[in-house]
Image 1 (cartoon, rainbow, N blue to C red):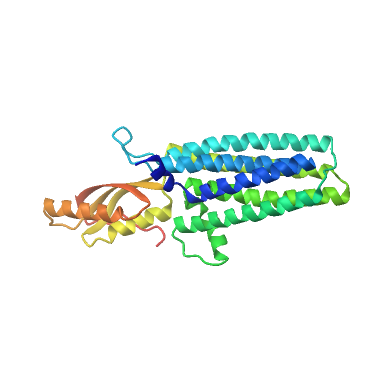
Image 2 (cartoon, rainbow, N blue to C red):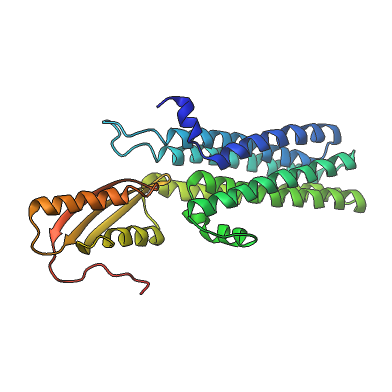
Length: 320
């Protein structure tokens, strides 16, 4: 598979976010240079970090789609976790620089100029980041197979974001903070201008830096455990179990392990078949169940072992 073909399979949310944040970085950077606003500079750094991270993660999500090889038989799914962790380092550096700049502005407050330019840029940022955030929410709903519509897209995205792929989660969290940070920056700029308390510019800058720190910690933790190898969420386990047990010749699941790598799942399971089957028939059933599992686009591979039923029900749905 060529690199261009891989890029076409990259995470759409991160690709759109990278383009949007590149535009915002340029616009905010010009405004920060003209006005001298510390908060505007902080949001410029934020957008620059987002653009770099999301572009980096987009490439990582594309590389994660490479087919397994003899050397890497389970595929490259965890590559995206590694790319996201590198992006987290960038976020952490930007967070430090933002907090440092904010503290300087509190110690040495100064008036910013071109208030109308700053307001216009922040409104543009809220619009662009808000658009990207909505796209990320829709992507979460798509990846988690939710049929939410209208405002329920928002509530469902917050509820299911932990089930989405690492790149989509990164875009969701980053642009959630970016949208809120743009609103915070706008309020800080307006308060500093109309009250004369110019140190508020620094306060807003520090708050944006703290938001960046929080998101770096959260995303870093989630992708660290993903890089180590983490079990699939309960909802995915139940979905796989229901698919296996839907076969009329499968009577029980003795054991099952589902490992998440990137946005794909690796299924290993021992299944019990009805008594009296020949070895040839049992083999046919095993391959039939495996092929059924592989129709799920989230499942990268499935390894099944077969046993004759011991007439003891082992697999139980804990929700029942």
